[in-house]
Length: 219
Image (cartoon, rainbow, N blue to C red):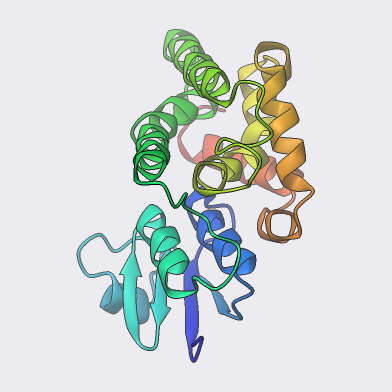
């Protein structure tokens, strides 16, 4: 079934991490190609002509774009093991709701935390903590967002975790102090081989964030 699977990605992308995790959860062999986003490859432009963004999952020469859609596609194509989305339609709808929430809220708020200063950064920090607390409330006392099983919402959120130390350093605050249950959940996810192999070292990500701060003129 695998035949040829290629992932066009960029190593610090929390969205690309989703696709990496999903493929590894399913035991799918894939070729990983790290893109230079300042000089995008002809293959990336050919495979995602609309957005020209990573990640792009290429399966048997056909592209699937957008990480949340890729994870659903992987779950449907390689349905023989480790289901990612719940089988119950209502629970599946809820899981999609929360990944949509993450996609609509997290990126802009987290960017303000490390890539701005002064009042804008303070506003971003408040927004970001509020979003994390909303997610922590949805998690509750469950081991994973879907209950006992690692699944779609966990995959949707966990990529941000490797950016957390950078947010804390540049935003000068503690996420664990604000959201201890969420950090416990993240550490639980990191015990999974699929996650540990897919998330880059947080120190490397923090260095990347420092480089972005210089580029944005924040430093």
